[in-house]
Amino acid sequence: MATWADVDDLARRLPGAELGVAHEGSPAWHAGRHTFARLRWDDEGRELVQVWTGEMDTSLALAGRRDTFVRIDTFRFRVTMWARLDRLDLRELAELLVESYYIRGGRRRRGATGLADLLRNTP
Image 1 (cartoon, rainbow, N blue to C red):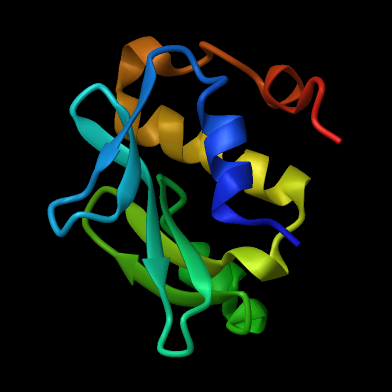
Image 2: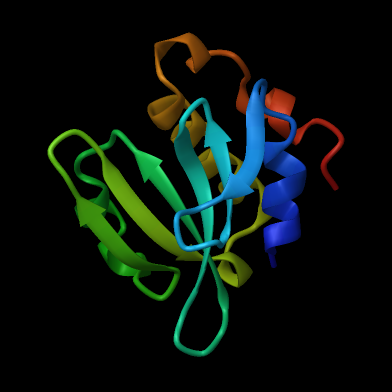
């Protein structure tokens, strides 16, 4: 359903978000100096998006969705997830991007936009 082009379309609407590259050269969106969305691929070449959250119980909450969220790593203060883009609809993708933007972009970005703002004019 979603593609990296959808990530680009949604992420560019976030205040101060900048398209760049990750350390190995893949496309990535940054909030300040931190990446909040990164393109990855699975072994079959399917597009994955890597995002972050502050919800520390994410692994448990998404245990039944491992077909979509193929990797979840929990660290001391945040969680990173790798999700198959073709298994996300635009609303869920937007929710993931906003949360990741908030957690990775720091205090001054929290509340800078809402989900409704991001989804405005999205088909």
